[in-house]
Length: 151
Length: 409
Image 1 (cartoon, rainbow over the protein chains, first blue to last red):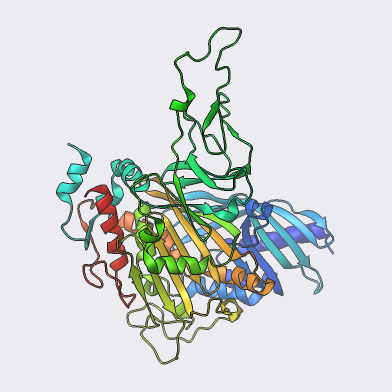
Image 2: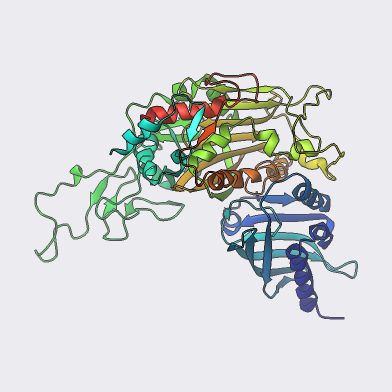
């Protein structure tokens, strides 16, 4: 069996491909049933502000977000390219991983949309890694136009 | 030809028409800074709990102007333009801090907490050489200061002596709603900025546009959560610029006014509806309430979400929307958790707000080659009176009434 770091890299690669290939319906499967997914910023973490721009404390809430994006919300066609760096183990079930996200709009415009780090707690009980927590700590609290697709 | 004169010559005679060049003309930005933001209006600055202790300060904006708002030694709040009187550099260049005084980093000109110039480095020169002339008087050089009003801990400022007291400016209904929102000490629980690729006035209109809410934002209808026909209405202040719109929780499940909405009747439901478990904190059945205070402030209450939005013009087609997510200082852990979950409804990724990030830009692009064409605002008539319906553009017309009066257009 591959070592933990290699398995985490594999997990992150699959996670990024799932979002970037628009397989959003598969995205909640990376999480345990009672999870925490939050998008916040470094400043908010520093100031002890608990709120995020996305906050889900169950896998079902993640599924609801995907359903809303598909069926209710309006946004211009766009895609992400996640560039995910190497995970750094910060505990027996904790890791941090830097990322960049380039957003490409319908008309071809590309922007560096987000940079930051994933602060993760993972679960390894079912013989597969899942996120117990994935806190997306963006380096900036400024977001261009809107955030539709998860980070 | 004078810019104001040009605009006046082409100005429609009614509030139901808005020429697109009013959102596009770069020259208007400077006129708006002078006549609107620095005119007889109340600008949102911060909340009192941002600066609880003497020496605490925050930088904020009045239009495009950077402003420092400070808690002084005696506990009062002051605010002044964040521009050194010497060469114009920012006096404070961070978001917040605590200081005994302020020293401009460029040439060490020093100011007290109220923004008064107190000393000039090498003012008498070095070894008798150089320095400021004998005729220079520090007291003749003053930072531009704002008059402050705090409404239940929400701090506003104005540069004009002609601005009426804030209670009169916002009117009784907005005042009541703001005081209810701030009926307990507020606490910031998150700050995010959304960069809107459009003129600031499009967002000011959007906040007041009760007509679009259930049509553009179909999240609630898609998941069968509420309907256009729920009770509520919109109240507009006498000056036109301030408003409060309210949607009440439904009393029965009989209504079905979906006419013309994009959502389809396919019985979608949330898998985890706990996001919408709400406490009726104020016992008033308010499900959603939007307050607008001209020119650049909005406050929303949606279920248990409490948030301030400050809009800061950055250019003719760019606006920073500052989201300030709030709770009360005495929130129980259960109530705080409700707010965190319900905040999925608001902000740049909000289920019922993300569309507002792009819709202004759709207008910008739609009207890019039509500066003299006119936007239509006839829903609910041509006036700016309060109405017992949200199928109206009365508060949007109110915004233009106030803007046109200040801009003399």
